[in-house]
Length: 317
Ligand code: ACO
Image 1: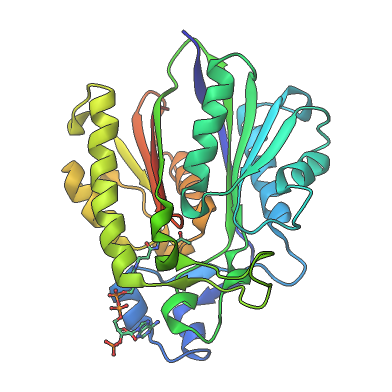
Image 2: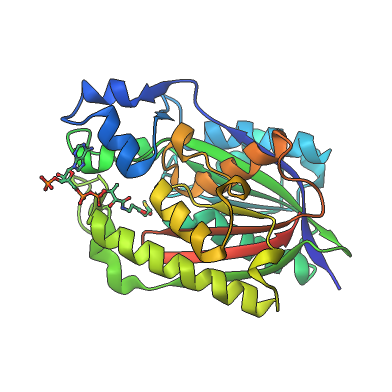
């Protein structure tokens, strides 16, 4: 049986840091409110001229180095992003050029905060069916460009960044299962109204935070059950929860559902804010590089975001 296995991880955060104290000077908010309601202390924000592909490039090179792979080895590139550099070419194609890779399939996946989980699901299919052997899978965002910096209910929540993994075909597990879902009925609860259909004036995140919060907690609870049931596994079989980093209270609720101690949950929301599609691979790379996540351990990656979209990846690292 062929599995896809993570052989290297990488990430990158823009150097420019915006603290809660900095935000107090921009909107009517407080460090205390932001920390109590979200767990966020600071976030990284791309400077002018720094695009999603710039962040993706560094994260990808770090992942390739960790896997011991070069441009010649990569035969698939999937980039999850909501904030592409251009309408087209895709950020995946722009990244492909930067990395000096030629000829392999390269495309973007757009599932907002669930983007990286979707991208892993797609790449896993390519590898399992033999179409690809060595995939570069990236979550990269400059979501700060989609914020209304006068709207305190959204601008304090997000940050920029990128994370990447190299996924390779292997006889050893590997990804055990992926679970991808969406329900477009909830468009109005979380969206950016602007676009080529509606006009480009209204390019800022709008969110009914309370309702999104409730949906996220319920949905992520259900996906934990679905994922474990599909693999005949118990909650206690999961070594690490690597969740989407939107809000510490959502993460704590999912951990409770798993009966999991918070010291087996990777938390980066305090340092990064919500980096949308970049949040799961950023959290993964953080815990791999600091030595918490070890080879052979079982990881549950999960995310929830605009669409609504939601999903999970269960894997042996
Ligand atoms: N500073 C100070 N006060 C604020 C701020 C702020 N930054 N933002 C809102 N408030 C006020 C509100 O105006 C409100 O005041 P009022 O009671 O006088 O009307 C009060 O704080 C409470 O607001 P709520 O929205 O009820 O606060 P809540 O506890 O729900 O927290 C939050 C808001 C953090 C947004 C939360 O609802 C949340 O995390 N939602 C889910 C976010 C999420 O998971 N998104 C999905 C992924 S994102 C993606 O896909 C792009």
